[in-house]
Image 1 (tube, rainbow, N blue to C red):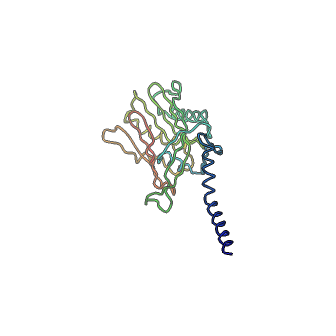
Image 2 (tube, one colour):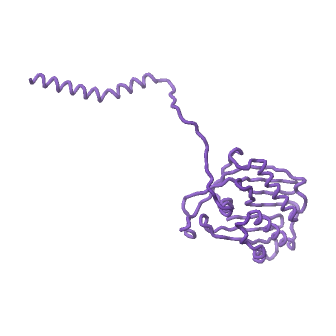
Image 3 (cartoon, helix red, strand yellow):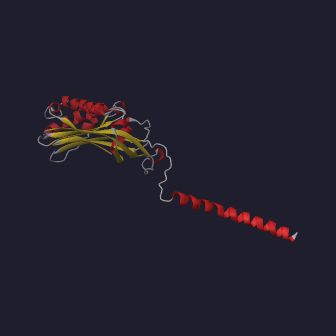
Amino acid sequence: MKLKSFLALLLATAVIVLGALLPKFVGERQDAANDNQLLFASINDVRLEFTQEEITMSQTVAISGKSYEAVEIPYGLTSLGKEKAEAAALAAIERYQQAGVFFQNITDQGEFTYCQPVLMYGTTVSSSSVGQGYDSDRQSNLFWNVFYSYNDGTFFIKIDDRTGTVCSVEYSDAYHKYKSEDMEFILSAFCDLYLTDLGEEFYWCELSDIIDNAKAPIDRSYLASDISWTDSVYGECRITFFVGENGFYTNIQ
């Protein structure tokens, strides 16, 4: 009986040892078989995808100014496409030209020198923390950066890809200067066109108040005014309208 018990114990011990060593043995055999060979694992196709949440026009404007990152993207990922983006920019330039804010007819002598869609990221602020800092959540939006150039200057427009709305404007002329007595008219026409393009969300802005609150230095070298509002996502937002001797622009913060 003692011999049988000893043999049973020995057999059990051998099974346990073999079970422990078997994975190592199999692994070494596989490594030897695959030595000096390239091994590939099948993977799924990689696709670039992103979604755009519904945002208001005021938030869209805020993103264009409160951005921390801007990444160029292919035309195929946009809603407008290059032709419609350029058409929207040219239509805006023509509206400004008809309002008399340019020195000359720039649409007859200019051309598009740059038209690129970008994905812009803006830091968001929760409604409970307005005025108390911001969290790490972010919204994003697609814009078109469009440059229209002519002999004497450049017109830069930032267009919302979803709606074709002009969100930012900058015009500069290297050879002509606005006179100080003309700046109030330029500021008024500039603000009126820009706010009208933004639509009904900005109907609360009174053009007369913007002009009445405009400020200028002693030498009258520029004229500037602004509007501001508080957004539940972005907190305090501000658009400054600036008219200088060589052009005008919006500064969004």
